[in-house]
Length: 244
Image 1: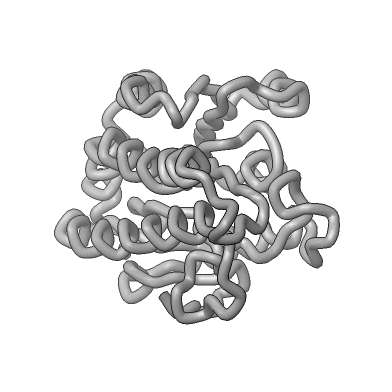
Image 2: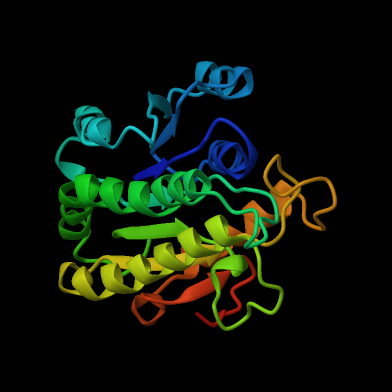
């Protein structure tokens, strides 16, 4: 891959992705977006010229469009090969009797609206990459969008209830993934939803069975193997297809 953009890259899975890509020299240019760069992310950028930190608050929808110009300065006419919409928020269990409108709105804004609007903004760059690599089969080497979802967004597998803000926002993201896969097929751009597993992060908590490195290695193993038939699917970090 010539270029990758990852949102929410200052900690957790996003930071793990940055570490994986830099350590394994998997991309020519890595764009890491976040509201405030963590000390660890800043240190990695200082040691790796391929890593570009871009400030982005995904809740500020009006400023999302500015990212495209920043990326273009680096990639030129080669476009953006891979967009990973990773930034996300969650709430606690949230029973129906306790759920609040502001929780629903925050989760929907960060987990659903922002990925849609950022993909819209970066679409010209994704199209450029797909065209510039037209000699390659559809996939991340050409152009792909990965929406980091969650199994909690699966309607078919919801047997616990609760989690209204998070479930609804991730189900909405999955719906957006399906529509994007249809709309961007003609442009030879793959779009999939990805469940990273239950991971030990600030969001996943200490009881999660997976560590970040295992999840991230699996995610990129799946991404590297993506082909045209995978567009519009909901995949787990180990390649298992999940039900919507």
